[in-house]
Length: 183
Image 1 (spheres, rainbow, N blue to C red):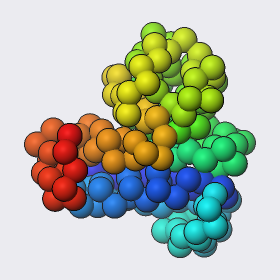
Image 2 (cartoon, rainbow, N blue to C red):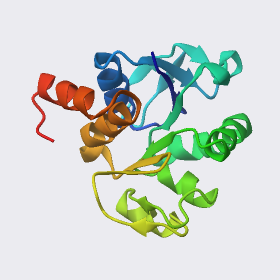
Image 3 (cartoon, rainbow, N blue to C red):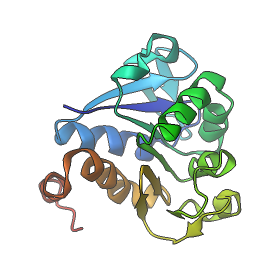
Image 4 (cartoon, helix red, strand yellow):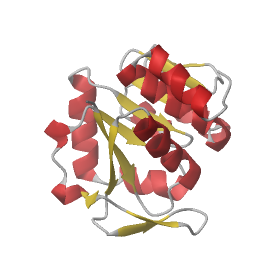
């Protein structure tokens, strides 16, 4: 069974993070909600506080199959300023392991050089930070081991792209049908 880490910094976009958690769990994928600030709870950009499964310092990255970064301007800044997370993200990317980001968070991939020559999408005001990407404006894009999503309104297609990458198209289609979402 696959396991993903969804990383939370204060100011994350709630729907982007929790849609991935919800749909991945519906697909039987184990999900760890991880606070980069090592807090038991993290408050999102709209004041919704969510209890975490663990803090970054308690995370065994060798047990994760994918790293997922939700957006939100402040949340994205908090993720990018976390040196330990950035080191692990680089290690995953360089090893060809999957990484995913939505909304403002694909800008992190752009800053780190992951998007050169790849199809990618992000929140419109962050497109100028997708260095080297072929920007598609799609709801979600998977190009090799990199998955990007456009924004909060694209949370379901993004989460389904994560599910499809790890569990296959048939399972992603099943989950989509179970939540009455037409792909």
